[in-house]
Each structure stands twice: as C-alpha cells, then as structure tokens.
Image (cartoon, rainbow, N blue to C red; front, side, top):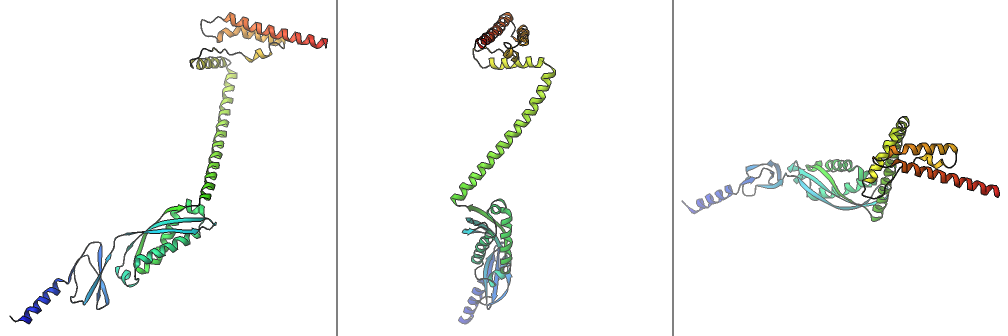
Amino acid sequence: MDIPMIVGIVVAATGLLTSFRVLWEYERGVVFRLGKLTRAKGPGLIFLVPYGLERMKRMDLRIVALDIAPQDTITKDNVSVTVNAVVYFRVTNPAKAVVEIEDYYFATSQLAQTTLRSVIGQSELDELLAERERINEIVRDIIDEGTDPWGIEVTGVEIKDIDLPKEMKRAMAKQAEAERERRGKVIAAAGEFQASRKLADAAAVIQEYPMALQLRYLQTAVEIAAENNSTTVFPIPMELMSAGTTSKGLAAAGAVAEGMPALLPEGTSGQLLADAVRRIADSATEAKETAGAEEDRA
C-alpha cells in the first residue's frame, strides 16, 4: 500500500470522526452549509459534512431568568420610584434566534428595561402597588410581542421591588395610621351601640322582674369579695338620696331599711343596718330643719 493511499484513508477517517456531534435533550444545533442556513437539528447524535462544509451553532432551549437592573422612573401622578424586575424567557425557534438577532439575550434585556419604564410611567402609584399582577401581565405581553420575531417566548415577568422616597413612605405611614384609627373608632362606636341595645333589653327585664336587681346586687358583691381585699361593700338604694327631703322619702327609706336584710349574706345582722339607715335619715331631716330655721332668721 503506497503512502498517498494511507494518507487519504487517515484524512477520511479523521473527517468522519469529527463530523459527529452529540446534543443534549435541551439543546438544538442550527446548521449552516457553506454559510447558508439549512435547518435546526437535535437532540441526540447528528452528522455534519466534514472539512468545514457544514458548521453548527448550539442553542439552549431552557428557560432563562433575566434580572432587570433597577429603573428610576416617574409614575403618572409624578412620584419618583425605583423598580426592578425579573423576566423569564426561552428560545422557541433556534433558527430565528441565530439569524434574526445578533444577541437575543442582550436585546431582550434592553427591551424589558424600556418596556418596564414605559408601563410604570403610564400607571399611578396606587395602581402600581395594588395591581401588581396586572402590571406584570401588561409588561409580559409587550415584551413577548416584541421578541416574537426573534423566536423568543416570554413566559413571565415579575416586579420584585418598588422603592419609594422616604418622604412618600412617611406620608403613606401617616395615611395608614389614620385609617387604622378611623376603623378603631368605627368599631368602638358599633360596640357601644350594640351594648346600649343589650342594656336596654336588660333594663326592660329588670323592670318587669324587680328581684333581678337584687340578684345583680349579690353578684356584684361576690365579684368584689373575690379580689382578696378586706373592704365590704353594701349596695345602698337610690331612695336614700331623697330620704331627708320629703316625707315620702322618709317612708321609702324606712321600707328600704326593712328590706335590706334580704340583700345581706346569711348570718349578718340586718337590724344593725336598718338602724344605720334610720340614723342617716334622721340626720338628713335635722340638717334640713336647721337650714330652714337659718333661712327664716335671715
């Protein structure tokens, strides 16, 4: 076998071995034959015409997370904000991503930045804070429409952070505090209204059943005695307040004094309390007579 034949066999074998390529499942190979686009191949084992007649460019089809740098912009209601976001996109047409655009990653980044500033400039601050999902969807639709000729599909856009000036943060904090105070006052007023309705119902029941008031007296005395103190509290009816002013008041005071033992705990002397009530009534009567005599002398 002569040397030229051996050289030819070696060159052919080398060219054949270098013509095979292995592409992963998430990769595609865009093949150019003598500079002309043929088609995208893969995944798996593919064959290229050797000796540089066919060239291949690998393209990754996985989703790419693109971080948008913070953008300083002004909202529709003239509030300066700094917004940053993240864009998720993937290559759906490898041939277009290679032929139609020089650097699809950089181009998508620039389009996302300009779109984000434009959408924020057309929105008010309240909309930007309360309707973030709608803003994300608008930005995604615009970017997806702009990158569609490049073979790029935008799967999602998320606004990560909205930075407000310190003065605006303080103003919003005051507004939130005032809103909480308003809600607290409304809730307290509603509680007072409901309590007044219940008290009116309770008063109607006590008016129909007077014994319920005595039971309430006893319950109050039990609650006071449960606080580990040495003070004993006896309920004094309001009739005693007018005992020293009218004869009817004196009669009412006597009747109350006779009925007070029913309100006392078992084993307590009711006669002592009745005598005390009568002495209070007598003192009030004497004070009234003394005051009347002084007026007559004057």
